[in-house]
Image 1 (cartoon, helix red, strand yellow):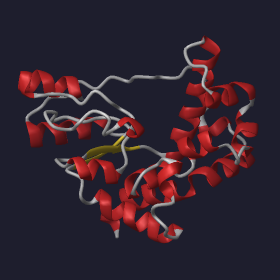
Image 2 (cartoon, helix red, strand yellow; image 1 turned 90 degrees about the vertical axis):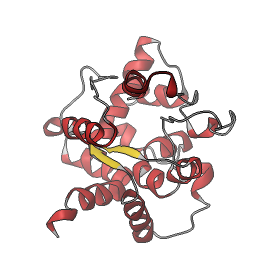
Image 3 (tube, helix red, strand yellow; image 1 turned 30 degrees about the vertical axis):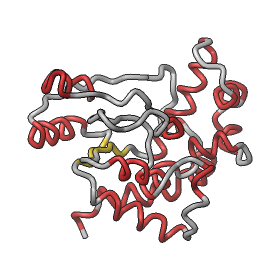
Image 4 (cartoon, one colour; image 1 turned 120 degrees about the vertical axis):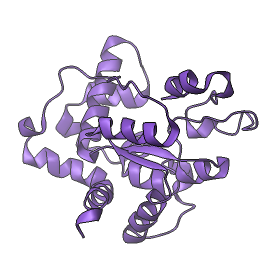
Amino acid sequence: MAEAFRRAYGDHVRVYPERFEAEFGQTPYDGFNFFTGHVGFTVASEIGGDLITVLRDPVDRFLSTYYFLRQMFNSGSERSYKASLAARFDLDQFARIRGEPVLQDELHNRMTWQLAHSHRLARRSELAVGDAELVQIATDNLSKFAIVGLQTDMADLGESVRRRYNVHLSIDRVNVTGQRRTLEDIPSATLDRIEWWVHLDRELYRGWINRDRR
């Protein structure tokens, strides 16, 4: 998306160099007008400007993350601890792991926490609320975004960006993971274990996509 804005606005677009929330603020925000990456709502709001996000089915994201980490580790592209866990355990075993902070940070209701405040475990304790209130905060924050797209309808996202900013997106699939199982191939017991990781994300996601039917 940053490249599309560069093509549309030329040198007027200065893209912030960091992509991960823990690194945001290390470089001053002044002088940059486009920020992209894995950033929680609180940090994004402090920066200011229009907010754009893309929601993804939480179970699909869990599966994609697992198989991507596994692929990256086996290819030698990433040797992080979380990637080593994905490579060491099959999907059902991986879904049973609940005590690893790196996996909780990456997978445990990450979307809800990111939209409510911050997905990072180090910051989650700053928002002392129950599950229902957490989902409500995330939902309320979503309503403040300039554009909320769905990963299943990227054409609509592109059209929304074109209408609002006169920017034409050419959206290609990136970080595509090969040899991943489909939902139909995964035992129900394993899907139940994955549910523990994403139950709030699923509530948030379903509520958002069904909001106009209420």
